[in-house]
Image (cartoon, rainbow, N blue to C red; front, side, top):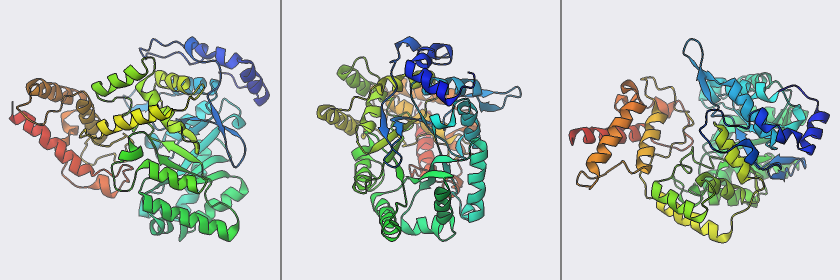
Amino acid sequence: MENISRRDFLKRSATGAVVTAAAAVGCAPKGSGSDQSAEELPLGPVTCRKDPKTGQDVSILAYGCMRWPMTKDDDGNEIIDQEQVNELIDCAMQHGVNYYDTAPVYLEGKSERASALALSRYPRESYFLATKLSNFNKSTHNLEFAREMLSNSLKNLMTDYIDYYLLHSITGGREYFENRFVKNGILDYCIEQRNRGVIRHLGFSFHSNRPNLQQMMDYHEEYKARTGENLFDFVMIQLNWLDWHYARGKDANASDLYAILEEHDLPVMVMEPLLGGRLSKVPDHIARMFKEMEPQKSVASWAFRFAASHRNVQTVLSGMTYMEHLQDNIRTYTPLVELTDSEKDFLDSMAELMHQYPIVSCTGCKYCMPCPYGLDIPAVFEHYNRCVNEGFVSADSQDENYRKNRRAFLISYDRAIPKLRQADRCIQCRKCMTESHCPQRINIPGELMRISRYIENLKRNG
């Protein structure tokens, strides 16, 4: 797509020319197998909400740039498919999606640059960029690292300012926060960059429990009382209809976390509305109930409507790898139709059913990778969860369908994951726990051992 001025871009958007040109520049699925064409997409832009700090319109649908489509280079190495990224962002921009969230650690450090290459073809003022300070390990808890990371993000994103800058993955309370960001001067540095306009909004992504979030808000209010200004401009939390009341982990229900942020009048950015895709691939009998309620709507659309039906939610992130994912979300949010009370009750009942399944709460973020012994940890968890959802996991060899399920599980497991990358290769070194921060707080070695034992029992019971 050609470079265009901000005036021309806004003019074309207003007249609908950009939208109707969608099929020519990327809104048609590329090898997706979808029977939905670009012409079936709504003509208007997705619903927006006002940013309380700036008054700007922010699209309720945000692009999470952690799961860009991949391809192979001439040497067989996996790389980001830049052509498809461009097509996806073209379609998103044409339908009013203006919030793009990335991080220095996404896709082995390549996400920021790939996202910027696609977005740089549009006026900088027509979209919002969000990225993160990803200083996870203790060795990176210093001011020099923070300065370098922000500088590199600005360079990779081809910009001189970041609209939304997040302290990445807060997993503890006040003491944890002060050791990681305050005592070393990093927080003061971020505030200084906000005052200079290099950072427009400062916030954090949160992966812990209710008491720890309350401690963070206490710190926020103390700063506000002392300076007369907000310390944080927004907070990102995991929010979906399963985690609303049934989050795996003590005191981590999304309803409680949301209520705390609502009390402090802070905008909420939503991550994992689909729990890494799990809420779009629910067990078959649960999927049938969704279809009975709304035959023309996808299962995923329920999750996106749920997340956006909370008024303090500013935007909802979605890692839309394929064009049909983007198209479905555009339909859901053009315009947003908030859930009724009866629909919320229906989702509560679905959450009760989902809570009974022995899945691993992995969202495929890959923070646990690479494994020093070659395991493909997310792939193992994804295969196991898929087999649970499809009914191929039998707890008892006396079950009626045990033999069929056993065969289906073992054959598909060997096809999906190479032998040397399977669960039984885990030696319980715990590097995935000590050198990474699993946002879902999964006992990764323990779950790998559980799955490995399950598979060993299947083989023995043949």
